[in-house]
Image (cartoon, rainbow, N blue to C red):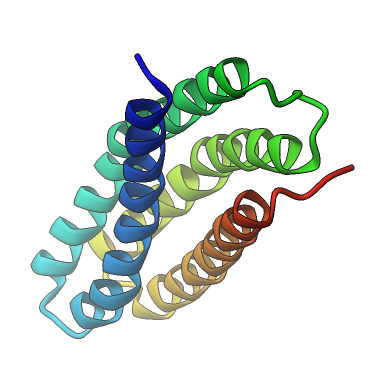
Length: 149
């Protein structure tokens, strides 16, 4: 696969990651104002995103990123490459260790009609999502600027 094709898939993977984050920022507060059954459906859907969608997207970003480094002659020690690898690793860990657990807690709170707990979990989830998105944007800046060590 040529450099241009790798770059297209790499950018598409990042766009899929960022786009899904933005959709969740928009829809999560909207669903929080809907009847509980609808909110539960939304949280279940976001949990599936975390368990499947983001894993595929992260794998595409990681594989194409590694292939781009090998194809272009950049080093895995270049600052922007290190930032990119760190972002994929941190994003994966946050998905498994934070988002999945928060989603599970959110579902329990909604199913037991504990609106206070649901609100706290929703707020915490959005805070972590903001950090995840900022990390992704900083990584994009690092790539565009080709940060050096």
